[in-house]
Amino acid sequence: MSNNLNILIVDDDKSNLLILSSHLKKQGYTVFTSEHVIQAFEIIKYNVIDVVLTDIEMPYVNGIDFIIWLSKYKPEIQTIVMTGYGFDELKEFSDETGVLKYFEKPIDINKIIALIKEGSEKKVFLQKCQK
Image 1 (cartoon, rainbow, N blue to C red):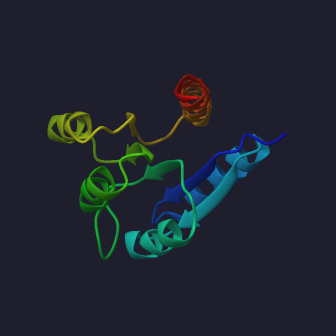
Image 2 (tube, rainbow, N blue to C red):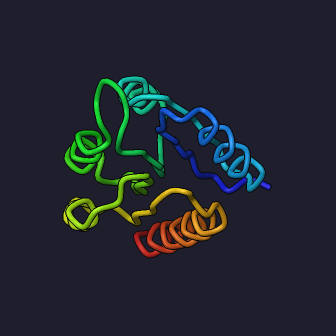
């Protein structure tokens, strides 16, 4: 089963990367992983990415700056935020920058899979409407 979406997971928590990527691959998605934003930039540079799942607190460049960059230079990429540090300002920031959804850790993988599926169906619908 192939879902024809390329998903990039950016999180400095290696166990979270492994769990999320394993579940998403089982759903038929192509999954890229990165432990920090600098590596994520390289992945985006050389691959078509449809969805980014990103943590906020990471080394080198934080997730906030990454989301700002994505909204400015890659607005076509659907962004999902996952963080262990939930606060109202972050939720408001997510809304302002076009983040698809904001999740507080621990992550419910079934909710993420449902959200990605919903987003991919919407993308296919919009592509058909443009033809």
